[in-house]
Amino acid sequence: MKKITATFAILVVTSATILSSSAIDAQEHKPIFTKSYVQFMAGKTGTAGSATTIGFQAATKNNWVFSVEKQKLKYESANLPSDYQPSTGVVLFVIPIDGSNPRDKYSAINITGGKLFHTSRTTWITTEAGISFYKAEVVKFTPVEQTSIDPAWLLLGFYSQSSNYNTTSEIKKGTGAILKCDFNWAFSNVTGLGISTFANINGVKSKIGIELKFTLGWMNNATKK
Image 1 (cartoon, rainbow, N blue to C red):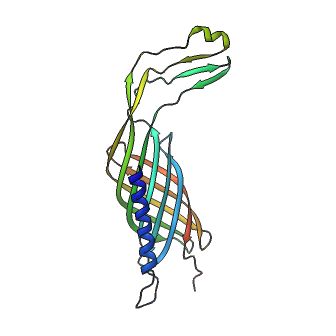
Image 2: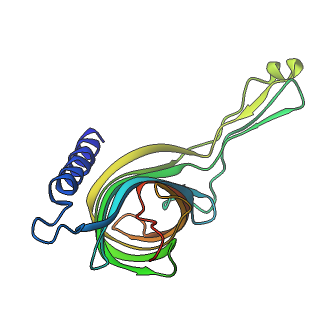
Image 3: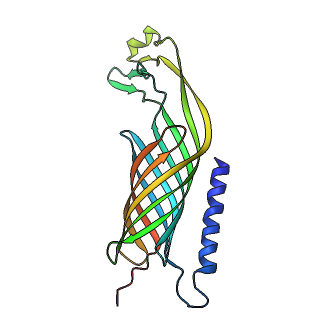
């Protein structure tokens, strides 16, 4: 995880350096990059999974776009047995305590490129494809006999029953692919909102998802002459 975070930081700093050093064409004095902004995203993947992303995106005057981002996904384990029963319990006779299904955790650095399509002065769509360097924490299940709390605790209103599986985690690393399509709306020169959709293709469990996003940076939202 530390290596992934360090890599992401290096990529963001490198991207910012490229922008600051080459943002103006020396001969024509025209901006090379027409948009550059940081993106903060959160949403869903699958029916019970979550997705969070932070990244950087820039677009050139020829409407090419590139992005670098760090994405985290949590979703129901791909190895979940069909007969899995989570731990359960009751406190003070009436307060239920139910365990949840274990989740796999996925973290990745995504590097993508594609095209930008203007739909109005303040809105645009980006389509991108790229490579994903991921690290996944995958849950493994081992069947065990369920156990219950000592019956004496029932007199005090406490009850619990363990799961019928023990769980351990296995770390998997690899390289995958990612596809993205985003709708963006700049409601000012420096801030915007949008919707991001993605398909994450990897050797652990490929996922699709949707995120709402907030953007902060240079939108180049100038009035047309």
